[in-house]
Structures are given as C-alpha cells and as structure tokens.
Length: 304
Image (cartoon, rainbow, N blue to C red):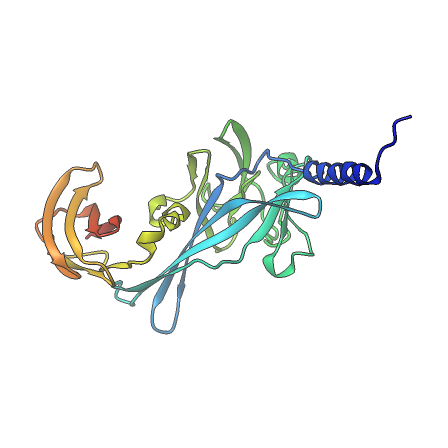
C-alpha cells in the first residue's frame, strides 16, 4: 500500500484552497466594463467666483472583495473659476487616491462599496425598474437620487457597445431622465446636475451640446513625466491674446491649429512664459500644442 506523507497532504489542501479562492470570485459584466466613463458638469456661484466642476468618473482596474470582483471607481475633477464678468481666473485638478468599489449582479442591479465604508454595500441602480417602466409612470428614483412626482413623457433607446438601453425622459427633454445601465442624466422635473457624456468601448453617447474633450482624462495621468510640469493658459476664452506659462520646464515651441489639425501659427521660443496674439484669428475653437522637454502638451482654447 502506498503511503502518502503528511507534507504532501498539506500541500494538496493548500493548492485546493488557493484554487478555490482564485475561482470563487463572482463576476458579471453586462452594463459595466473597464472602459466606462461618465462625464458630468455642474456650475455653482460662490461669493467671489463662478465655479465650474468638470468631473470624470472612471474605472481603474478591478479588485476582489468578499467573494466578488469589483471595479475600482475613481473621480477626476477639474475645477475652473471665473469672475462675474466671465473672465477665467484659475483652475485646479483634483485627483484623490481613494476609490469606491462597484459591481453588477445577474439581475441588472449595480452595487457600490464607498471607500470610507467598504464593509457596507449599497444599491446604486436597479435596472429592472427602468426596463419595466412605461410612459405615464413616474420616473423611478435611485437610492441616492429622488425624482419625486415626475411623469415619464417619452422613452428613447440608446445604443452603445451593442446594448440597447432604455432612456426614460420627463418634461425636461432628452438631456434629462435616467438611462438603463448608465444612471441618472439629470433631474427631469426640476433643476439639477447634469451628465454630459457617457462612453464605453470607444463609443460615446452625448446628452448635452458640450465638448466631451473639456473634461479631464485619466489617460493623461498615465504619462508621469508630464505631471511634473504644469501648463497654464489664461485667459480662456480669449479676445485677442493669451498667456502660456510653465511652472518648471522651458517652453520650446508653440503651434496653433484649427480643430481639423491644420497648423495656423508657429512660435519658436525658449522661455517659461509667452504671450500669443491671435487678434487676426476668427472666432472659434483652436488647439494649442506646447512643446516642453518632457513631450508635447495639448490644450484647447476658445476665441470669442
């Protein structure tokens, strides 16, 4: 009779335990995947300035927790401040290290574990209530957003990543309501915040006529060298001239292009601050390419 050593028995059970741990994580990915991004804009007055908040919500990988696979939900926020005459004052990019955990289940429910309370899982979106809703019903509220008595007047279908999603719309029109798998766009029967763009797998749905490129991009954060140099352009929008200022690296060259990528002006310099005159440019949007030691920084300006 073959005798199995205690050491081999222990090794067998360790392998079994590790294998069960690796494959016990429950994971569903119908509505959500790692390419999903939500871009929302809010505008609020302060005692001295008008604050515009451009926020991009995105996923940065996954993590296994409590038997489930979650996406790491992060928030990248650009704050812009304008005086009450409409002139740009300053901007701040906020990239906190904290993240929430978010997942979906096979019934279409989406759950979140807030970073400050990871031991508590809360329901974010019950997509079945959106799927079942009909014209004349009240818009279904979410656990963190209350529509109140707000009748569904129209139902649209949004197609993205081969999914056909129901968009329930109230009196506020197509820039409001709630979308299956995406969430709240904006309050339909009163004023509220607003989702501007949602993207997935390289496709984008736009709810507001606001350029999605105005929002901060998490992809830009993956270039560590460029994070060391801050480039400030002011004022923006521009009437006749604007200033480009670098906090660290010398600016070598500035190229101004139209939105089709055609070069309209080249300025060769070797300094940290430059004033660019565009009084002869027509009103519109332009791209500024700023060459520094670490690479090329791309910015957008508006001439009015």
